Length: 392
Image (cartoon, rainbow, N blue to C red; front, side, top):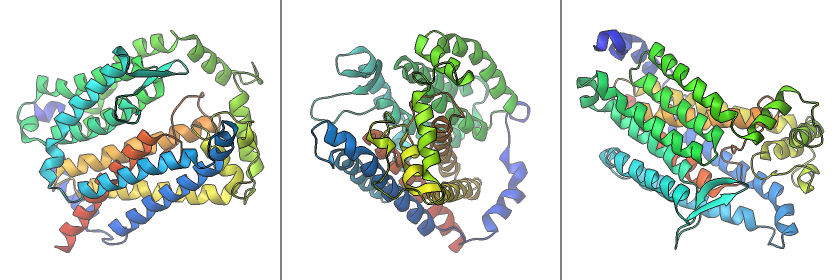
């Protein structure tokens, strides 16, 4: 059964060992920590610059949004430190409880008064004694840990065939719940990350393609079932259809990017954040960043995300034959964060239809930042472990 349907990575042992042996120390855990800390600081400064006009216009302190974001950042850093102290088996054992908790949280959001609707989307959960948060962000982390542990478990290798329907069912159930929250792009991100982990876990590519082919008809039906989605697609395909309505946000975003030039207008000197560009502190924060930091800032940002990707994939390859759980974690976390970055930047530059997905480290949204920092804590542990192996 395994030879016919699933990859066996032992066939590539020599190649993987070469990757682990080559250029050891060139990209270290210290480098990764520096990259993450710089991204957090850059994101915080950019968020403050983009959000203080909105805070003042609402009668709030100018530091209102960055203060909320900083609290979640500190909590995420504390959790990341704990993650790097506790035994690895505790992280593995958390996979099912975390999946169950996120499943219950999604149900509470959708079917109880604790769910909060904003602009027609029911994505937030407001429980007593807790700040409101988005369960879908917790579900993304839960999926990565669960699938990483599932495919690393020896029982998964022993009981093939129908046993491998479990991850597919988990992906489908959670995707359906997230989709019911009217988070279409988050659903796509969830699906893509899950399927990438399935591919790394041994699924043949043709089975992944078959699964996606079955998803296309209902996905298109759901996409066309909401008028606002149809309007967004129409405005994307025909940019001149309504330049002052549907395309206003994208047009203002592109104007802000053009105004940035080579060196930008300087931090705090952006114009489009003063009301011309809606949701500038959320999904369109990249536009404000480019306006104030220019192409030089974009080059630095892209370099940081490129380093993040290289470090994550290097951790994935180095751990492949030693610890499949850590290897899967590295792949899942890197894919989740970088795909989200690419989608956000494509949206604000008009390469994809407008959709609500934040830019990691930058956009307003405490839950997203909290989860991203925890994911970085897990990824740091993987990279640190891979270096320890070579030094040992």
